[in-house]
Length: 142
Image (tube, rainbow, N blue to C red; front, top):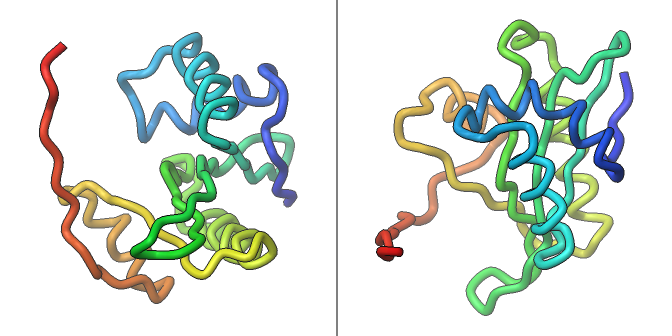
């Protein structure tokens, strides 16, 4: 089992089948394009856990600094292949992200999770995360 950054388009493409389970509205080309653009503009990184020659879990994240939170790792995306859950892959990737955040001088790790994602919430609570804010949004017409 190893955890690496997806640096090339080919590595990002390998992550797509797992990420698509969390973000089913994305096509492969949209995914590769968005990852590249967000990497350039916002420092977005993709990390993946590979075991037995296959991607088992994927995370997308960025480091940011805010007055309210200080320097933080914001976890945009975290998903384990649906056929590979409860095998420790998500745990390993999450723990790696925590250590990576610490190595970058982050004070906290943050994420948002859809209110309907009960299984994910159980995982986050087990990882000692807490709900400490509401997230509000408004759609802006285009």
